[in-house]
Amino acid sequence: MIRRAFSILLLLLAPCAAAFAQQPASEVHPGEAALVAEVAADTGKDPVALTQLLDGAQYKQSIIDAMTRPAESKPWSEYRPIFLTDARIDGGIAFYNEHRALLDRVSAQYGVPAPVIIAIIGVETNYGRITGHYRVLDALVTLAFHYPPRAAYFRSELKTLLELPADKLAGPIETLQGSYAGAQGWGQFMPSSIRDYAVDEDGDGRIDLMNSTPDIVASVAHYFAEHGWQADQPVALRALQGAAPDPVPEFAGMPPAAPVEQFTAAGYAPSIEVNPGLPASLLTLQGEAGAEYWLTFQNFYVITRYNKSPRYAMAVMQLAREIEQGAAQPMETATADVRR
Image (cartoon, rainbow, N blue to C red; front, side, top):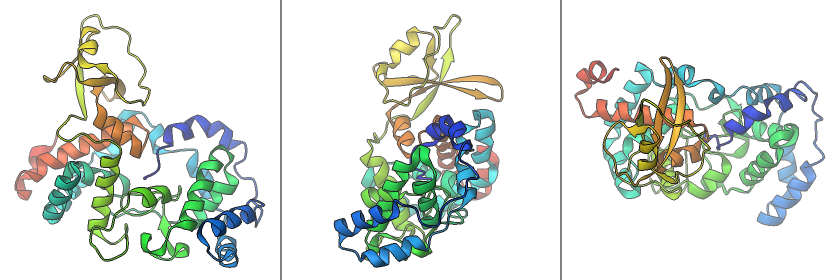
């Protein structure tokens, strides 16, 4: 989603979440009045209308339950097959072929490869097919007022949603549909990401991340560009383990800092030639055949700004690679030739 990058933390907090799951929620949370006052002061919006809007939100226990079991908690061997399917690869190739002129133009503008933009949309919503069935307002009110581990974050997102001007949303707030975390649109942007990174690419005077393909793809590209995507640089490379490698450091989700040559000396050489001075990190994933070692670079780190899970970033990278390879071939032969 832009699932705004908190999945690993959710996993760590799951035991805590169980302590309050299934607890009844009061109809009006005592924090609602303070939130209304803040939004009214910041924007000049009518506090009565804001109160009515929040009073119309419904607490959803299913949202609390979903927060304790994110897909990113699965091992790579189970996570990868969710997204690297024939249907999702073919869907990405078809999306590229249908919107190639738009995607290539946006890619050139922001320096982000079109297959990466497409892969984000593919992983997040299967190219707009699964954008979420919760009202965004219900999701954010439930999590802001009834999910203590992340209440501050979701309260901030709820406040941002209430403050967004109408021309930055696909419709009235009470009608918006999205994920259980309150993300919306084909790229699953949280309200703060809509505020900071969504763009009106089609020039119609509003941002619509549900119905405007130009707005959708350009907003994803803008997000990556603003988070430091490096054009024409690698995302991740398989590392070949030597005979007596050093212990594997834990992937910390931080910007890469050690040069590739340092990992090579430690027994983890890149599978293809790359600048030995390029900053990298070492990632270990548990695949179907056992441990996989990967050297990850700045662009991998940028993908984890969309979702902190390294498994998510790896799925995006691998799906993008399949889409790029398939889209370079005639559609009738792409499916057979890109399978691994």
